[in-house]
Image 1 (cartoon, one colour):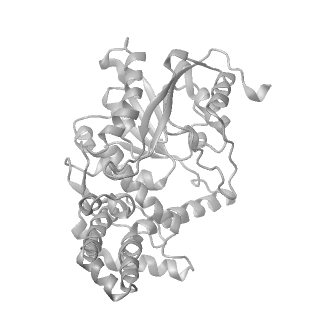
Image 2: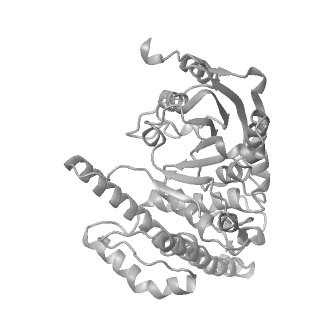
Image 3: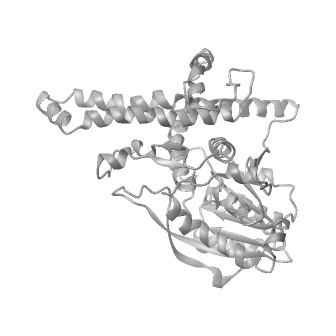
Length: 409
């Protein structure tokens, strides 16, 4: 099995560290709550509220809505919510979340046995109520839709086109750069993938013989990647229904209700067959790797740089952890994640500014490698009327021998 290294705050015993630990424990509790509350929340948001709105229509209008099958569609969606919920329950149990304050403790291997633990789930929410906590945080519940879409992108046949457009250029670059190294010796080359999400790109890199570690900050992603990587034993063993959450720009009912089967390959079988050059590390990228000095042969960033509040931190960390002459391969837009979010600091750069900064930090950018016309969707619903396409920059940079450190200027 791939290893998950929990490199996050809160493992010490000082007052401050204990406070951090309590905050982290509560954060995990909140995330578990979102997974467990998915069915209740989605049933209300997707089905019951819409039935109520239909019921408020004039009788003649209501009859027309009934005749075209909308009520039947909503009842079908209610059943499909249950299928998604089964996946989320298994994700929670298979991650062995163990705390003394009401976190579920059992490892469950099937949705049938998960449902036998409804009493335990009820007690979990009772404890949250006793602490004055909501059942789940609204923004966390929204992240569950992103998890479903990420499963499609990373681990389904339907996501193959997106992976071809965004992952293939990165994988080909690694193959070309290290072409002098025989495949049998590639395990000596260490590749880091920050912002690894559900782990497919990092897994593909490891599958090509490189020793690869994915790093991810989000517990939603870490828990979900752990499940898909370590607990799905067969291809296409799970059907999910991500598109039931989309009511706009839908061509027909079948499109909205269609299943997506995951995973399209079985990492579990690869690990059982001896693949041991892949791992995932949890925590903030800058903090987790702050002590890594010239350890990595390559860093691969895919749709990651724009997650930075302070891009300089990211660039300096990448530079620090790369070996001399090490390579950084980047693909992704600049949709700065913290722009205009109240209470969050954010420094947003143009691509031109970013390239100057990259050079100043100490990288040499391969000008010939720069591509500005890679058209990349992200978590696309291929049957939707609406599609977002990024003109995604791609470049390769190398660490220079001498660092022109911004901090020294």
